[in-house]
Image (tube, rainbow over all chains, first blue to last red; front, side, top):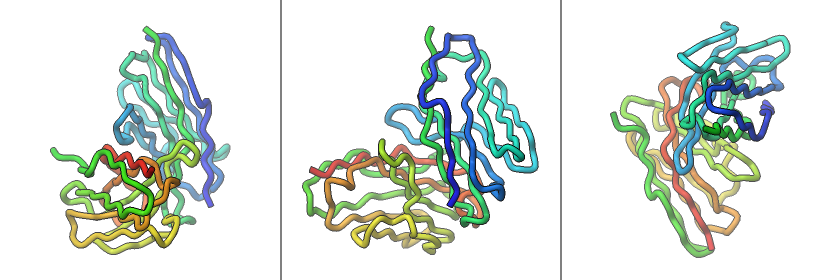
Length: 113
Length: 116
């Protein structure tokens, strides 16, 4: 089945700096790539998603890029703020595997003020 | 707007007891998903429903686990009998569409289950 790897597992940045989280996927037929933010005691919250017909998508301080050839996608957060501190998950879904979402292992982001 | 509502938020029970987790999806969403989150295995899809019909239950770990969706606004995940290794956070999510994961999913805040 689909396999999604996520790096790094933890990331510490200074407030105002940028943060980048990277994911790779195994199935070239994957066509939907969401990113979720999970705060302590809460469920994952969708923050941005991208489909395979688009190379980049941006929403204010958050952007996602997709490289289909290399089978990887990245989350970029600019001008980080303390409230960005959370666990971030990438995911991928492929029609080859019933379009079920397969999640990465997560990245703990700490923004130091 | 009300999001996905799960109950209870926390459940502590003894091994062998029956556990029932409940979920109310977002009104108008026609797909519902049950996930389990653990440190070792991360977020795993257990089962999903579309228009109240179970479509794929290949993620359900054992016959001790069962899920139902009697109507568009309610679903249950039941574990009987429960075991300590079932301890985890269980999430319910809902979305529009007919696919399993190619539409944005909205998660509830989960049920933290501890089996002693």
